[in-house]
Length: 370
Image (cartoon, rainbow, N blue to C red; front, side, top):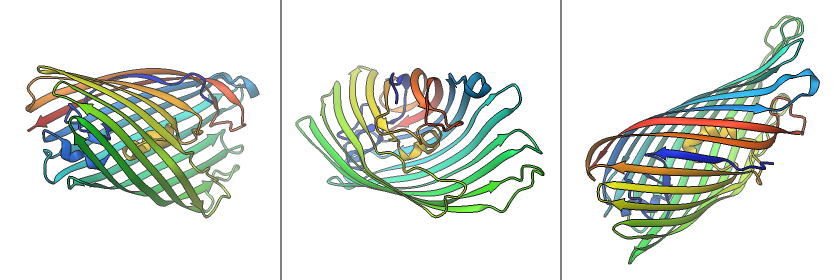
């Protein structure tokens, strides 16, 4: 269980945010597809970002030296477009992310290491008719996991090659009356695919025939928000919740997966406009295995085994300066540190160990507002 929640500080120019109303920052993408028609400007952006994570667990059992260390490197590229609000509005998103996770430890007699390489791609579209908006998204997630201990003739090695296809359908609505806005959505996300697992011969290192595990996931979620907007200020509070998670798997001989936990995300947003300068803050409390579709790599590498009571806090600060329309260049830098008690994903012995996690993220964005 997490005993100290995650505290993050972002200087960010792009992220998901809105459920009840449009943001002062036109590059904010709509969680609720019914918000798109409330936009005042059209927008197109190209983003590139990188995240580096180092996690250290204080494990001293079994002759382990210097604990267990996990490193994660994530690289993301995103192209985003949103039309000006009014009438029929549309948004489109193309996102690609690659990541590598390495975890392991050393003893006086051997080294143990697990390497996971992942890749995801997302294509998403929104059409908002004014009264109701619809979001359709397709995504592919693949990763290759290599568990490796010692060498022949004492080799202990197994690999898992995962390939999943995701489909997300979401319907939402948002209305504004005299500055007060209310929005809500309902969504269903499914994933189908398989994991090919191969166990290596310990004495020769030869591969055995793969074991195939067919997977089917289903996630049901909903959200609601309320906001207030003037010419110079925007406030919003929202709650998103995963109400149901399901998992079916055909073969658990070499790999038995746990059904992901449910979760929720509570958000508060405050934005202000001072001439050409716009400032914003977003506070989020995230519980369990809650993540957006374009966070497939980070959610599967970092939070796949999160329990429903596990909590993290994300604080983001947004800024922009310049004319309200035209080309702009922006960037962000973020850093966070967490202290938790977590089970080791290497040992899997149902014992929680003191864990310290450091996260650094940075990126750049080229934007055009019209």
